[in-house]
Length: 364
Image (cartoon, rainbow, N blue to C red; front, top):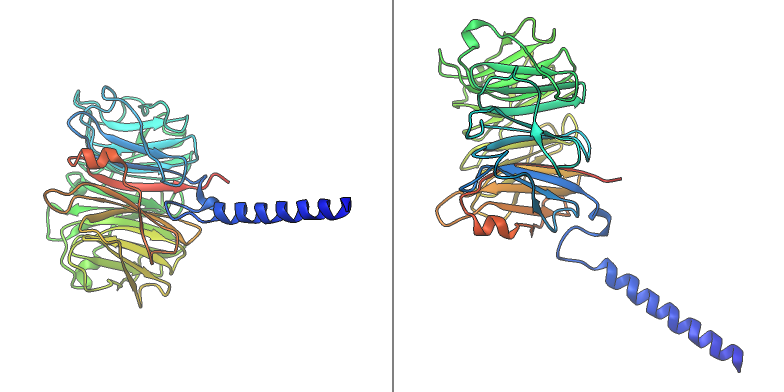
């Protein structure tokens, strides 16, 4: 009899634990249990006071604002680079007091400081890229390219030919410390946006003009990404171009059918990519842009930032596409098929804030 009671209790306990495990696995409000340790940041423009840096430690379920109104006064953040969960760099417009807007954190964003020495000019810095902590580049107005080999403690200016020193540079990417790509706004002396390439660390630069040869009209590039010999570039007018041979030849790989600009690009491999565009449009390709799958994030906003982990977890951010709208953050656990809201109340309450870039890392 005692044995029967013991067996009955064990059976009840097993049923209870099974129900508990099942209930914990069902969660439709945010990233699943495997994703709760994903760490991310999103950056954007100021409210009426200071530039926006948002941080999450639970896959985007909750967000907190970092920085303070004094240090980030008036700064419009345009790009972010996460080297690891502690070391982060952000770039943007100068502070209200005129000091350049390049900032670094070494403690996961709990505290921030102005990056480097006064070697940086007081300009807008729009793009940042790092191979590692010893190879970091930033680009900005007036043909500005700076390079750091010491985790952004100091910067060295990389000169470009005089004819490009009035061009606004918007994005930068590097294949190696020697092989660097820079793209920007329309060149001051012609009708096409700037694209520069160097294979010797910036001693010599070659200007490429693939949009001209491909008969694509555009005013500026909005992104450049490099993986192996595969180079991708995007920009306004909803275009995507790709070179399979490190810039020697280019092909038009635009998805087509879009209404706005191609704003951000994420490479999963040299032939797999996601592109986000205005008015909630998202495209993916697994064959170097020959064919695209279209998704829709159920928003009228301009989607300007995308981050992907493990090929299926996707975060996007967007800024208002019209009056009465506010910036958004959305998450997909199924590679873009369905989307969940992760917009913090701060953005809803402050429609003047625009988000421009979002980045995530896994805390594995």
